[in-house]
Structure formats: C-alpha cells, structure tokens
Amino acid sequence: MATALSEEELDNEDYYSLLNVRREASCEELKAAYRRLCMLYHPDKHRDPELKSQAERLFNLVHQAYEVLSDPQTRAIYDIYGKRGLEMEGWEVVERRRTPAEIREEFERLQREREERRLQQRTNPKGTISVGVDATDLFDRYDEEYEDVSGSGFPQIEINKMHISQSIEAPLTATDTAILSGSLSTQNGNGGGSINFALRRVTSAKGWGELEFGAGDLQGPLFGLKLFRNLTPRCFVTTNCALQFSSRGIRPGLTTVLARNLDKNTVGYLQWRWGIQSAMNTSIVRDTKTSHFTVALQLGIPHSFALISYQHKFQDDDQTRVKGSLKAGFFGTIVEYGAERKISRHSVLGAAVSVGVPQGVSLKVKELEKQRESAASDILQKKQEAEAAVRLMQESVRRIIEAEESRMGLIILNAWYGKFVNDRSRKSEKVKVIDVTVPLQCLVKDSKLILTEASKAGLPGFYDPCVGEEKNLKVLYQFRGVLHQVMVLDSEALRIPKQSHRIDTDG
Image (cartoon, rainbow, N blue to C red; front, side, top):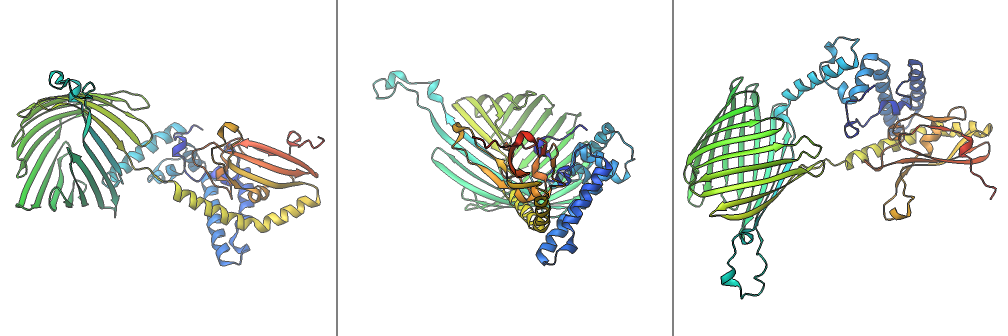
C-alpha cells in the first residue's frame, strides 16, 4: 500500500519488523510469527522478577502488533499512516470496509479536528538570531577629507547591533500552558537582556487569559495580564495590561487590538496603545500560499509612520522567500529588501539590506532556529529494550544452537548491525555497529534464517545505533561445518544459508 508519511515521520515501532513478516503477509504467516514470539517472551517462563517484568512488556508489544495487523481495518490504517494513525481519535465511529483513499481522507479530517483542539497547547520551541551590519561607508564616503588617512582606501563596515532570543511553550494540563522566553541584545557598545515567564489558561472554546512576569537590566520588573476573546466566528479582540517598574516609578500600559477576517486570507487590525509609547494603528494583512502583503498606518508618540511591505513565497523545497518594504514617518524614510531560505530541517537563514534617510545603510543577517529534537534519549531507551530482549532470548538460543549443532545446521558465529566504513577515503568516520549475534540465532528455524525487506532496527533485540545514517547487516555463519559470510543493506531482504555466501579457504 502507498505510504503517506516520509521516512523521518515513521513511527519508532515497525510491527512488521517486530514480527519479522512481509508487509504482504497472510493471516497464517502472522499467526505463526505471533505464536513463536509469544513462546519466547511469555512471562511465565521467567522466575527472575526483573526478567519477568521485561518479558511482560515485550509480550504485550508483540500482542499489540498482532492485534493491529490481524484486523483488516486497523492494518489498512497502519499501512498508510503508521502507528500515529491508529492513535487518532475517532476511528471507532468510522465505517469499516473503507478504501485506502477513503481512509486517507478520513485521517486528514480527524487530524484537523485534533489540531484545532490542541492549538493552544503545542510545545513550540524557537529562537532568533539577528545581526545588524553598518554598511553606510559603502555608499557615502568622505574621500576628500580622509584621503591621507592610512587604510582609508577600504570601506569601513562594522557590526553595530545583535539580538538573540529564545522561547518555549510547554503544556502543563489540558487547559494550562507555561511559556518561558529570554533575549539578549547589544547596539553600539551597549547591551542587556531580559527573561519572561507567562502562564496561559484556556478558559473556554472562545478565549484564554495569560499572566506574564518579566525582568531585565534594560528595564525593571514587568507584570502583565493578557486576554483573548472570539467575539464572532470572524472577529476577535485582545487586551494587554502591563505595569513596568523602573527607577522613575511605575509606568502603566494598556494595549487593545480588534481584528476581523475580511476574507479567507485577509485580516484587518485596529490597535490602540496607551501609556508606554502611546499610539493608534490600523493595518491590513493578506497572507496566501504564495505571498504576504501588509499595509499599515500609525499615529503616535514618538513615532508616526506609514508602511507597505510585500513578500513572495517560492514553492520549492528550500522555502525561499524574497521581500521588500517601504516605511516613511517623522523619523525619515527606510527602504528594505532581502531574502530568506531554509538551510536545514530546523534552520532558516535570511539577509536584508536597509537603506534609510537619515539612518544610512545597514545589512541584517538573521537566523531563525527551531530547537532540535534530540534523539539521544530515544536511542538509549531502544538500546535498553534491545538488551532486555537479548537477555530473554538466552535460554531459547541455547536450545536452538544445540539442535542446529546436532544436525550440522545453521550457527550464527558473529553478526553486526550499523554503520561500516570500508572505503579508505572515509577512515576518519566513526564505525557505529552493535552485536546482534543472539537475536539472529533466535530467528533461526529448521536451519534457515529469513529476514523480510524492511529495516532491521525493528527486529527483536535490535536498535538503530546511528539514526539517519546508512546501515548494513554483516553475518558470519557456519552451515554444514563450512564458513559463510554475507553483508546486506539495512532494508534488503536476507535468506541464509546460500551457496554464494561460502568463504573460499583454498588459498
């Protein structure tokens, strides 16, 4: 069946690999694999409390895999969307006998409903690094005045400001979310930082409230209250009250924003701000799949201005965007243009040139970095699970080896799984392999070992020692007293013994 998920989105547990069956396996094949693993992991076969506990967990996992794959409805869902497709709420009311296309459509509908429910509760770690470069000397030089000064032949370009910020949202309960953020900034030799903590509570389907506490060396402690409310399906309002404590006393502030969806892609905003930098602002924002357009007008103290900006979104894998803006007010006029591009799964790099009167010319380099999800803890957990499975296999493997030796059958002498470096030009790369001799011997039946066309990381007793890198399985085995050796790709099917694997010892 077709898959709707990329390799990066596949679930950690591959039920087909766990049972070591083909994706096209029949009910009889599934039942035979299930019975064999149940005999291996049955808790009643182990007296040691620790081994018994590990056996119970693995036994339940095998049972779960069989339950999913033995039912045509859940198997179809699993084949298309993996394990997370089964975890989607709502399948219990879906009519059975659905086609793959109908299942895919139903999954997308259920997923949209779940995302709407969790909209206010997502963890959203993100950060921003912004660098300002003063390039005025490139465009406005005083050659006549400084022509005798050493080194004046080269334009003077310098970094005049930098800003770094980081924030993370973490759901505490179904209605409460904690938000922690911090920032550091410097400009023309002066710098400072701040840290903020906010607690948000969803009060109803139409609104939420948020308490904010902050502190920093540029400004004093801050206490704020923010409220959000949907007035109609197309209109909402937000209100933010703040108390800023400083050496000059307490400075209160109030900001209210009224917004309305003008159409599917356009939103109009009316903003009124009193206290800290009082102003009135009106703006229209249109955001589509290929563009983002903003026009705004502000009247306020100390800044009044008009702004128009446009951003074009290219429909490529790198999510390239080009943008330009014009801003004019009492402070002068600024024209800015630039571009940004995705440089990795988690990072976006952007650059913009700003030309202003009387500000001059500056270059901004900005990197937006989403916090990477570390796989280290997951690898450690999988390693511990694999080691537990190997301990449970020891007795079965001993009996299998005795039976195979009595008939001069198949004995796995050594087996390794992971990243091998055979090319001399790559000697500096680190080899990352694990010993899988016991798990492979445990899969031997009637002097045969058959592995299906799937990643070996899901087999009992295996785990992925190098996530995201190319892996192989290397096996040294003995059959009828003769040495054999084979190496296959991670997702390649394997069937042993084979005559072609025989090691020629004549030389």
